[in-house]
Image (cartoon, rainbow, N blue to C red; front, side, top):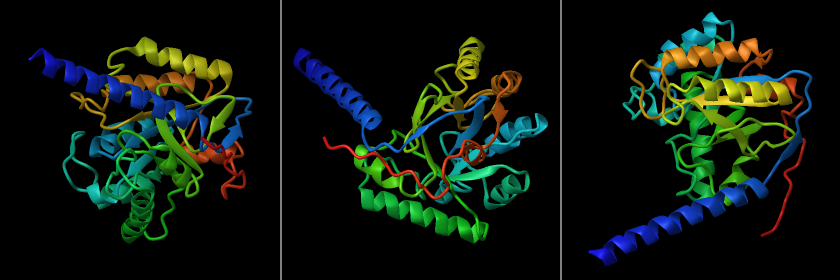
Length: 273
């Protein structure tokens, strides 16, 4: 029994070490650097997977405050159940765009970048664009969010060629020299549920450093999933962001205002490991 327990602990430790090494290499390599210089801070609100409540609740809050968000969609999930509640339908996609929100790519079938080949991941990106064009002809997907556990280095390098900006996690904001292939985001989820002080702190730090804070969540519901947040916390995050003097805009609007080249004019920095 002790031997089996020790084996489980060893596997867990090795997995944590591997994840730590992956994060370190992702931060250091396969970068597409951009120096963020702005007189005012920026904030973007983003939603992964596009659960219906992210539009019916989250979108309503944003609209009431006069701002808009970015919704990362995996087209194969549309109309299906998920751990974050029912995913949006094709009609919801159309309503979202009519309301002035932005769509981003989340791969076609919600692929895990830690368990996929580069070829499969790029195919999924292309398939998502094609499938979404059947719903909304001519739709543009200029920004991307990595599903699930984020990418490995080879996928990060490949995906960055397809988008103006690619968002990950990290529980912080972007400032100074930022990596457009792995922009940082601050998730509103189980980690900070009910902790308005933590949200206020990151908004204030972003304002002080004139950075770009990208909030992320999934569902917005009175009884949210592990990955979502409650409407009152979300509304306070929006209110605090606006009160901080930040420009609260979708991700691509921020990219354009900050001077990030739409055609990827800035080449990726290459390193060898």
